[in-house]
Image (cartoon, rainbow, N blue to C red):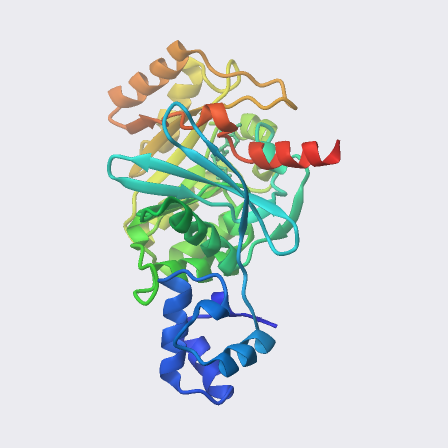
Length: 345
Ligand code: SAH
């Protein structure tokens, strides 16, 4: 069956016409799904009961069930655990900032990238999410909070560039002016650095922000933290970043998770400056959120501040990521993992 919420308006129009309905019906249905955020054909009240029945036979209609919601007592961040139709679960995070609400979504069920400090990858990849299932996380949260989402970051579980075609279609639907119409500039996609797909993305010439999870400044160190570094060298990675900027004019973000005594020394920051100085970029420092399964520890506050100051002295734009929702399994994949482990007991 065709996944109706993953169709563009043009594609939906063709489908609806093939079923013997007028084209304007597709526009109405698209609006029900992507603006009014309905969860079922039966909520489409200006579509006849007979045609809704026809649609049910032809299309599948994804929708998520919130099975757990945790709210941070510290900052109001909410973490949602959603069940997909096939029983898999994904997590998404809602964060309230002064400049608007931001949602962090997952792009896959699990992940196969194997980054050493990350909880999402411990059980490997189950499957990739469909475009509709990525949209659904935003739609469900909009409905549950009753507030408009202004920013979307694809930084939850999964590697978005390992689900390239679905990611692209998701972006097209999310930014479509017949849908929620979120601006490309308010969308960030974070990658561990799949070089060929970073270049492909650059060639799409979108106005989204690309965030690269760097985390180390030499190939040797990076390989210890991130298996993907065995495939692509830092030089290739930096060239791909420069290419992204050339093609899109968009400043890159480098994410750097600070792990105590692993990548947070003076030498590390010096090397980081040398590596990224030539690029138009922004650095996001993330104090590592330790997971039980690994023995990595957070950098001391002093080291974090030292890192930030040294970057700033070198005129590199830097922020320390606010540690949102740390009391509610804020780090990638932790809530889903807890859920899976509890289920297994
Ligand atoms: N696969 C993508 C997006 C998911 S993770 C990527 O690798 O970029 C979003 C960011 O959080 C990445 O920079 C990731 O390396 C980082 N991250 C994952 N687990 C973390 C943890 N326990 N502590 C700090 N940062 C973490």
